[in-house]
Length: 209
Image (cartoon, rainbow, N blue to C red; front, top):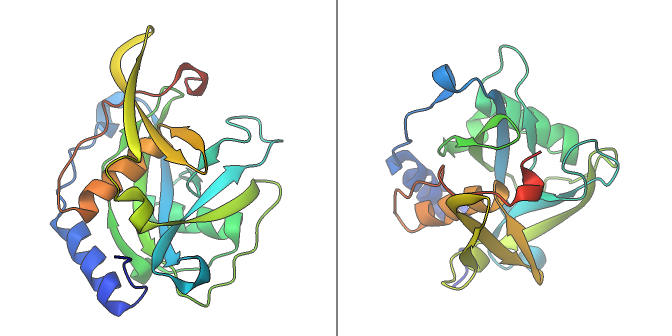
């Protein structure tokens, strides 16, 4: 059954995020650059439940061009993770929110390319206008929460270059990999009421740079 896009769903997800215990951050010792992404919850296509916004990065970007991603980027000096996620959401998709719209934070995810990403769960109103910034975003997609709560949507494989499992999220006939797949997977686990860690889930080699 689809999660209706209403105040009841908003409260339920906020409660699940509040009940989630974040793993201790490795920021102090990692030397990684801080970044944040928004798991931006909004109305699904055709008004059928709740979805989150997933983007394809512009092909002209210097790093990770044309890859699937959650809206986000590097934290500016003095910004909290929530502030950075909200700023990036506005810069990429034209969606202006405040910290009152933040429902919670998930675990930090360390990437092979040198970032420590914090997922920030936010609630986007049904009437919010989405205006793509073509310099950063090629397209935006609404992924229904039902689609990430199925048993068969996430899979795991191995690669010769690592002993860690590589996670994959199947969407629109394609495999989306970590870090994006790992963050979406943890959010799906939070929706199921589970504290599942994802920092050890591996990225494919093409995402290491």
